[in-house]
Length: 207
Image (cartoon, rainbow, N blue to C red; front, side, top):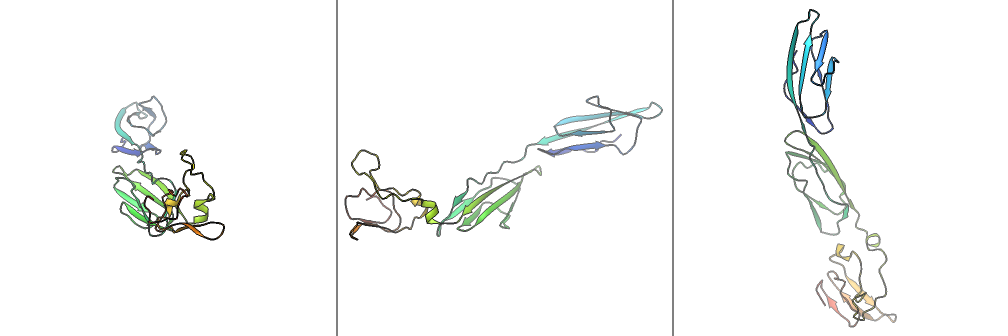
């Protein structure tokens, strides 16, 4: 009998040993007696066969199981304006991105949508992951912007906070009182640091 060369498997794969010749009796290393043997683990496979005259022969083959690679592109996110996101899929032999790129890392920009990658390691094992780059929609991202806060020095709501405003680093902020007078202005982003006590104009810096 001839079991062939050494077999390499990736996690989740199986291999069935089938002999080219037919024999009267088969005995595998696990004492099974079927004409074929299927494995999905690292092990030394052995078979002994007997023909119709009682003559016997045997062969062995090594099976090595490799774990699949792990690739993680991170959580879904948003890219706004001229900002970009650098995706690093890890250190592997080859990369197949849904964008058509085959290198690593890759750079994504606003409106990229769903981007996936399939990586292959040195054993030929593969894994995939994907990330969703959502549209840069201020109304959806920022939610309800609060119109009150309490700058009384108790460390609770002492400044006017717009959650996720960091997604818009070039935002221009203007606040007016009920009579239409400008009471606060910030160009080039906002650091959630206005305490409501003066008119100010800032460019993404501490006030």
